[in-house]
Image 1 (cartoon, rainbow, N blue to C red):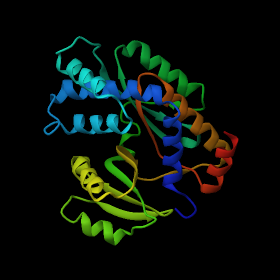
Image 2 (image 1 turned 90 degrees about the vertical axis):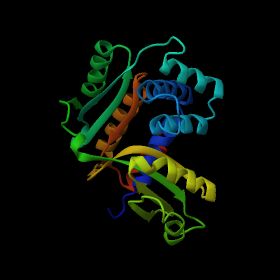
Image 3 (image 1 turned 60 degrees about the vertical axis):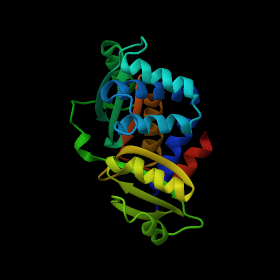
Image 4 (image 1 turned 180 degrees about the horizontal axis):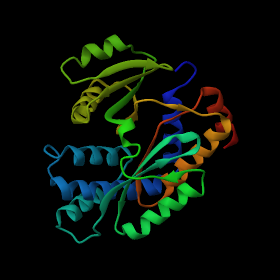
Length: 251
């Protein structure tokens, strides 16, 4: 959409998460533990675990912490049992919001998530009410200052790439989740400057927000992100560069 930047929205989320580094370790440890429990401790055969471990290393988590989390997942060490669940609902302006949770007590977590929605101009919906509006993809964003789409495409021809496009001097490479780790390894080997990478849910369409609704929506998403049991929050809000600049200046 002209005048709107997906990277501006991602950048806000990234900055918000970077400000909460302590909680990132907790979230990553839970993800590693559950990934190891579900698929075993072999990074080569368990792509979810491989992704989680790579993310932990990018955030400078000590190897001892990673190894303990894996052992807790496989049962080699005692640890809490976390259950995966997803909550779906709507935020200000009718934006769709999905919240992925790892919790050891659903009876505690669900009312807390519902309260965050209801107190911040949103409402929790039924399972499936918004998930159909998103596609799960691997996303890697490269600083395109010294590169172009053709160069990157040529170096990634042997990989399963869905799309490569340039926005705001950044080059976004999207792929099926199954290809994410291999593509990321290839990009790092070539030493392209990666500024963002994740397996995420990408909205099929975006909902543009005015300044007031954008402020409300960003507050709701931030509060959900801050909840101890929340792993990821996905939304289809779209905020113009002008509005994003104004909101950034307020912080």
